Length: 140
Image: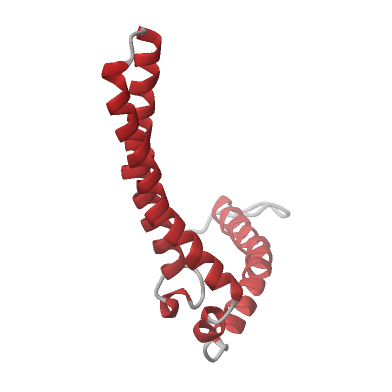
């Protein structure tokens, strides 16, 4: 009833299961080796008592807050002044190449000052509040 297998040969299903087991055994080592530093670093970060207050009192947090202020208020201010100045200068310009240049300045002022600067501030604020350890307690 059982098929005899000649000596020295193994059935195909046993070979397949043995090769799968070998692959699993070979891949467990590198996976554990890759996860070990991650586990150690996350454990160290989680063991800190209150990283937020230490970060908020640092010079780096003050610098980031100052950069936010410059981007939030300086970007739209400079962009708006450029856009307004170019818009006012367009009717008084006679040469078509200068008009084209003024329109380009107007569009760039609106784009960077009104759209990109506030959007960039929100993106950096999101990153600092959700990724930087202790960023949420500073209230960027």
